[in-house]
Image: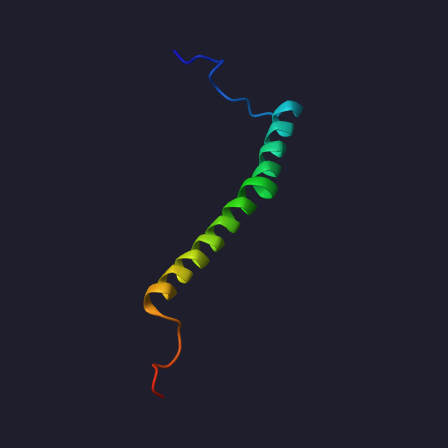
Length: 64
């Protein structure tokens, strides 16, 4: 009842599949993740900046 075309072979992956996986890895490692990292750090900085606009800068209270 099992269809042999839906089963994966136990042999090594072919060259086109390896190339596709390498391109996907490179796109993630050098394209998408750096953009995500800059966005997260920038978003956190913006959040801190907006909080300090409302609550004031950090440090001891005025009068000391």
